[in-house]
Amino acid sequence: MKEKLEQIKAEALSQIEATGALEKLNEIRVTYLGKKGELTQVLKSMKDVAPEDRPKIGQMVNEARAAIEEKLEETRKRLAAKAREEQLKNEVIDVTLPAQKAQVGHRHPNTIALEEVERIFIGMGYEVVEGPEVEYDYYNFQALNIPEGHPARDEQDTFYINDKIVLRSQTSPVQVRTMEKQKPPIRIIAPGRVFRSDEVDATHSPSFHQIEGLVIDKNITFSDLKGTLDQFAKELFGEKTRVKFRPHHFPFTEPSAEVDVSCFKCGGKGCRFCKGSGWIEILGCGMVHPNVLRMSGIDPEEYTGFAFGVGLERIALLKYEIDDMRLLYENDERFLKQF
View 1 (cartoon, one colour):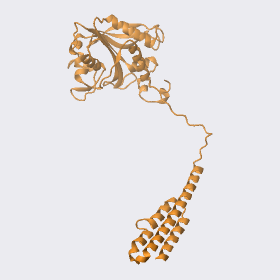
View 2 (cartoon, helix red, strand yellow; view 1 turned 180 degrees about the vertical axis):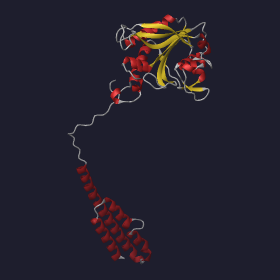
View 3 (cartoon, one colour; view 1 turned 135 degrees about the horizontal axis):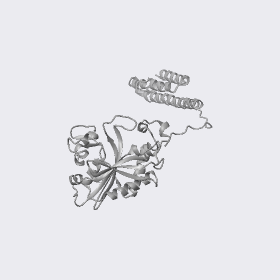
View 4 (tube, one colour; view 1 turned 120 degrees about the vertical axis):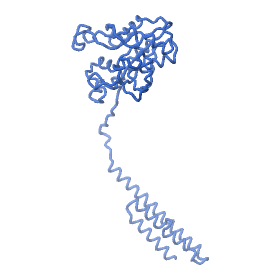
């Protein structure tokens, strides 16, 4: 038994000394010290040793185990240090080289325009309100005085989930939801994404953004609407900007109007930007129709109000002189870096 232990110890130490890989050390540990290792098998055969010799043999086994473990640890440290040294040689970093500059993004042109519009109206005492993009037909059409079969539904053709649920074609449903939940006075703007069944071209997209405004209070008149939009245009396009109201028709407002602003490029003289007219169309507006107030639970005999809506992309295209709406969605860094 003694000779066998000496042989096991010598073989283990010899293999450890000869190895040059950390992975190999673990194999040697398992071979000699594992559950089925050489020393473990010796311990299992202790039942065949005479009782008076067992303490001595047990001590010899422990001494052999301790010698092997000590050699394993010593070799592991040496090989680990060698591997670390090789790694440092192979992974040298030249700290004198210039670092790569981080790509830092910035706000999208749409976001810049939206924040400017929000700033203007918040300064007038308005609240920013949002609503769902997937909307009930009732809020998107019926509550806005557009019943089934109304011709205006063709102009605002949208995407239907089913016969009662649509992707909203304007943010006006947010106005209706606000009127249902909140008693006047109401002063809100409702920005958000909307959807219409339009072909993609330089000025149209099936998905775009709108900003709609609503004011409901006692004694609100068309003069209040004109004054509000006049101030909005001056803050957005410059103090010398003038506004022009042209009669129009919207089912949810009466009377209604389209609003033009004087060309901020030529001052209204006529240029390529305004196509020689001196005016640029920017939004639609009007006094809230009594039917819309009534359906939202507001007495039109006591309260009046006005509403307006402007395309966010329309503002961005005008303000930054972009000639193709598709550029806003193509994520071309050459374009976006200009802002």
